[in-house]
Length: 376
Image 1: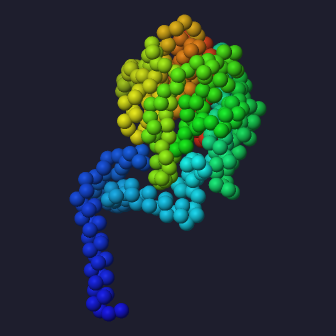
Image 2 (image 1 turned 180 degrees about the vertical axis):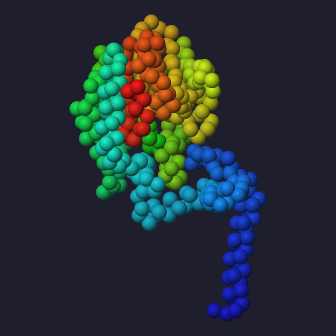
């Protein structure tokens, strides 16, 4: 290797580094990554405290990583390279068959599962209305045949059996309805939620348990509202080659109002009008938030019809199930225990609730630390 060649290689390497340094310096910082669906680290301000503790350097390293030029492209290249090398998983997401991205489901903490089931039982004891309870199996269970061969996958059906045996609530099983329709598009391929079709089959299981006559699917007119949905599993996987999901709705929103309730710093209730389908979210990454406008502590759907009032203790899966229940109730109240920290039993008395449903996906239920509020 000649001296001139070494100088050339060194100069080329320095030019390469200089190019990226200049590009990173000149490129404007981004506040949010649409593909990753998260806020990006901004340039931290140094202080004596953060310099001494090391927090500044840690935040600065995160800032450099988050704001690196062409970051989305490098993430896509990394996942594509790993797939080419035979890797079937990235960031806890399996690259499944039929363009399906499936979150790895690990065996949960047995103590937490037992505690959460006991909180549901405590809730049943604290109220004098019927309480129905179910857990929703996810893609890793219903679509297990799409997983890479040999992929570790803890049993969700064992947890369903445990919940059924332990609960004092009226248990109803969502699994058979979903399993019977496993060849249909009942889950999104790029998101952890069920589709509106999957939610419909979940609704029929609940309706049967409550003695209601479910509206036949044939009576609904399906409306496709988006053909470009990439969900949260897509965001965390790094995968960029799968085709997008489709979002459909079935239930018309005519005559239906939705109100979200929060509290100001003085504890006073604040009302925010929402919609059954907030289509403004179809213009952003988090398109699933179109259902009821996304996360909320307490929401109330008013249908304008005569009938009983229902309370859903729930996670985000019920956002797409709730529209189907509007055919049977005058009001549907939705409480998310991640944000609602008041007595649920008192809420039931104060609002004349006739029945309650506790409904979570299996992964959310076995990891949730907020169900303790049910028993208070």
